[in-house]
Image 1 (spheres, protein in one colour):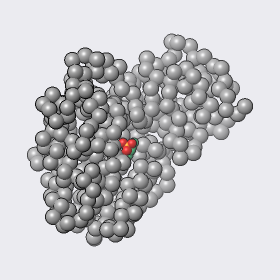
Image 2 (image 1 turned 90 degrees about the vertical axis):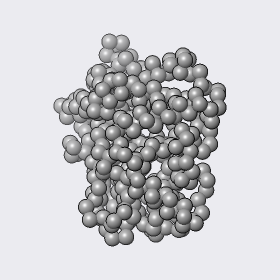
Image 3 (image 1 turned 60 degrees about the vertical axis):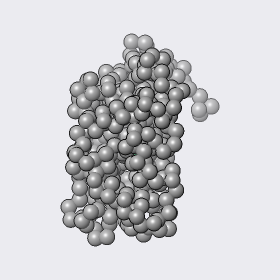
Length: 377
Ligand SMILES: *Cc1c(COP(=O)(O)O)cnc(C)c1O
């Protein structure tokens, strides 16, 4: 049977301490999970409109603003539905007439598709590039929102966040940072909206979106509200801002997601903040890509070294090694979620290197892959 998993047992001393390498949902630190049964977890099962839960939201908002050194006037906004809901909300509330989208993978294409389907907007200006690369923003007259993706989770390509030169006055830069926020460096002066969901670099669970918004983005929301455009309440970012300012969400959030996000944020802050988290990811990436480059059966999928993501690594295998079989053997040994993004369809493994993942575990993983490939030969 083509799908059967060869019986290969990886020696215990090679295994990582934690075998979770999924790109999302991703590894949650065991200590964060344990905290849920301690004092921090006491709010579970209580009202999100009362002070104890609002304190959690407040600490999350102020902690993120501090960690990212958000300039005065920027606000931390949150709501339900994850990044996918945020795309729809942005389609209603942030795009005025026409947006530009860099499309270089599944996620960046989905936001573009949401805008394309909206009859009240002009067809978006989409710039594509071959998978494994990213296009560059091109300032054009009439574009009022530039949509970029700091880390394309489906391909493992990362890009710098930079305002385009020559864009129209007031044009917004909106960054999908879902798998980047907290693990890749960013300069807040270069964006108006930096949005993400916490089940990736923030090592929490799904269902929530968070967004840092500049004064220009907040002004855009007011303009949409004043324009009379119909906006479903669930997707109304003005309502999200109103609620966030009271440390609440428009409807009931998953309290566990909030608690895990706060725990991870406080862990990151206690361990040196954003710069130290980025250095952990740098180290993991150095280990992973260094191993792949010196391997005789593996190679980094992304050709340009500075576009290889430090939070989600993609590694191509030579034709004589079946990556899917390697992933299945790893899974049978408790090392999980190394499968590639399903729609990419390549003979590769995809490995999350978020801040919660220990660089030593990435090193152990490479040794496990070597062991499995030799055993399969
Ligand atoms: C995972 C991911 C999304 C989707 O996030 P959801 O919370 O599942 O909607 C969007 N964009 C990027 C870059 C992602 O990695």
